[in-house]
Amino acid sequence: MEKYDIQDPAVLLLAQIVNGADADPSTYGRPEAAGLRAVAEGFRYLGLRDDHEILEREFIVYDALYAYCQQQVGKAP
Image 1 (cartoon, rainbow, N blue to C red):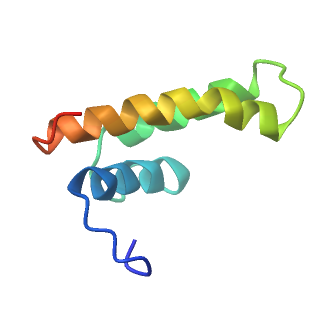
Image 2: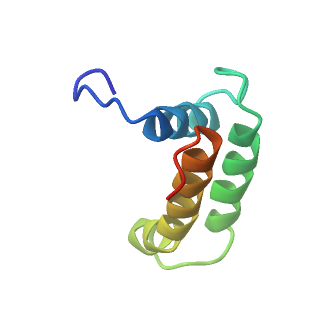
């Protein structure tokens, strides 16, 4: 986030959630991180062909999560 000087508050919130899901859900104290971790893990159990197909299907989840973050920071889509 710092490297690219991203200032969008919704993206910053999204980054905290994603980082928590990837590392430790309590890292930023974002309760959404544990849910995102569970959803991402669930995609692995769908029997999809490969990582590319998993990512393709996960994109809608991240789009929805970004819209959620926009609402949380008062920046409606």
